[in-house]
Image 1 (cartoon, helix red, strand yellow):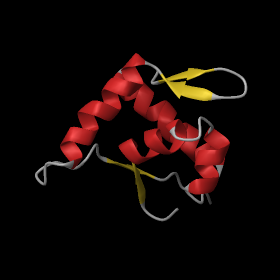
Image 2: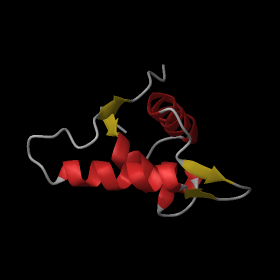
Image 3: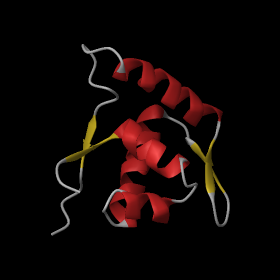
Image 4: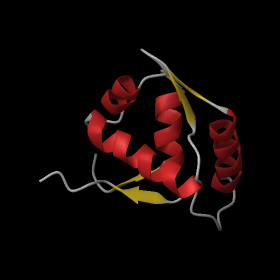
Length: 91
């Protein structure tokens, strides 16, 4: 994926199928940078956003609140919609 990945897009991309692998495929990127994006986001937020079980993931309360808060910002043209996260340099 070129450029940055919007944090909200990343969270929603994982929540829809309940899988990092399926989300990465849908975003046309590998799983590792997507996982790193979510790890950085969770570190910035200060808590995990997903319940992780084998083989699936789902939004937890913090994840649902993040989506709700940032979805509202997407509708405000003055907002950055949750901010872009630069894709890691892969080489």
